[in-house]
Image: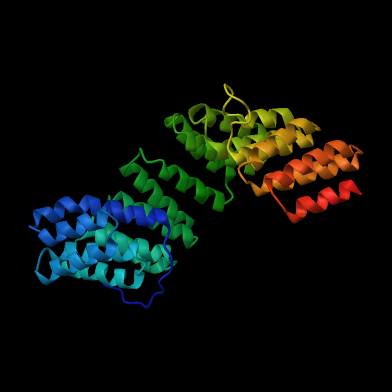
Amino acid sequence: MMISKSVSTGSLPLEFKKSIRATVLFTAALAALASASYLEKGNKAFNEKNFRGALAQYDQAIQAGESKPMAYFNMGNALVQLEQTGRALLYFDKAIEASPNFANAYINAGSVYFQMGEIGLALAYFSSVLKLEPKHAKALQMAGECHLKLANYGDALYFFEKGQAVEPEMNAWYFAQTEVYLKLQDFEAAQRILSKAVEMNPTQSSLHFYLADLYKATGNPSKSIEAIQSGLRLDPDNQAARLKLSRLYEDEGHFYMAIEALNSKKSTSALNHPDAMLVEMARLYMSAGEMDEAIAHYEAAAKGGDERAKLGLVAVGRKLGDQGQFTKARKVLSSALNLFPKDPEVMDALDQVNT
């Protein structure tokens, strides 16, 4: 199937480019079977991220008549990496024309169209794969994603459920079905799907975290806290999850539990955390009225040049000044000025405290 359409050449997501690279790695063995000396050189260059060098070798392979479908296909893959999507699509179509049953060429062309927002064209390519291979998991997944984008929720569920029957171990099916039910505002069904996923895959921390997000969105903070805690037992260094847990506790008015939630290094000093966590801890200490702890955490983060830490120290200095603690305010702001020399915000705050 060849579909001609003028398309723009925008930037493609990194994850999609990675999937294209994986396809080239997978097809390298097939190329070798085709006595493909140029293809082998092209694949080597590709895997070394020398995409222009790979293009030159694939072009030589085409001129030499080596496995043209594979050469066209990998030419398209290299062009994707160079963000020349219009040309890439032409070569995927050439691969399909040379080998009409080449499922991966349909998949990659459809994926490019999908990333470009050309959902109808993408769906046409994925549908072509399913005519060739009705149980092709990737095609089922992407056909479902296309229908989801088109708001055809019943069709999206059909493809996701069919794909799940083909590869039941893929967590992606649960996420996809949940997204459909969220679009339909059927929160009970969404929770049921994710709870089942957690039950079947209890060691997958991402499922616990996603379920926590769902509980929070549906106004159930206690369930959200439980789900995040379950995920953190599996992935204790997940900073994003710790921040979410902390904010849930903060929303409930539990400042010290919010601070404790951020502490993933309980066996070491509380100041041995990434700057973002230190700043968040400092903010919480300040909210709880623990100014000395707030200052210590802001200063620890400020040593790494964190702009938020500077603003935090300025806020602490101003607050201390408002409370009449001028000596302590000057000390905090002078320390901030040493860390951020000649910074106008720090200097302005210090001037106000001194007057």
